[in-house]
Image 1 (cartoon, one colour):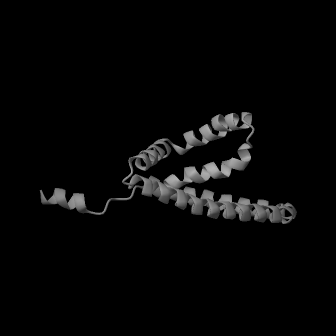
Image 2: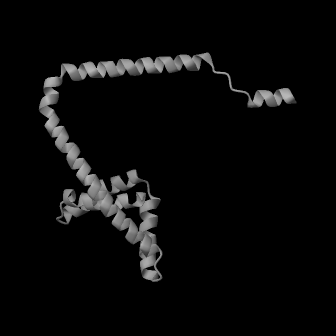
Image 3: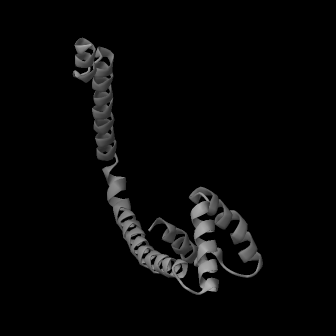
Length: 144
């Protein structure tokens, strides 16, 4: 009985093939990083030309993310206050919002907004690109 307990709590033995797989993985990772560095070095002229555009895109992404986080926090707070409200109408609206938005996967929501709702809005005369930011803020508020 004591030997069984000692074996159960003893340090597990490492399997040699797992250690070999670790070494192979790290060698492939180093080879990939060296190859990527050589690729960047050989195309440095293109990188110098495209870097300002990439930097501008990164800045726009950060600004959109920050604005979206602020608006998502506001919408999430309004939804939370609606769920805690004593007024039944506010509570029902907030409950429906939370259940629909949080109850469906984000990929389904993206397809719905991207293909279904945008076609309807375009037919009604709206520009989907102008309102996509507003809808994504509402969708992002469920992650708070």
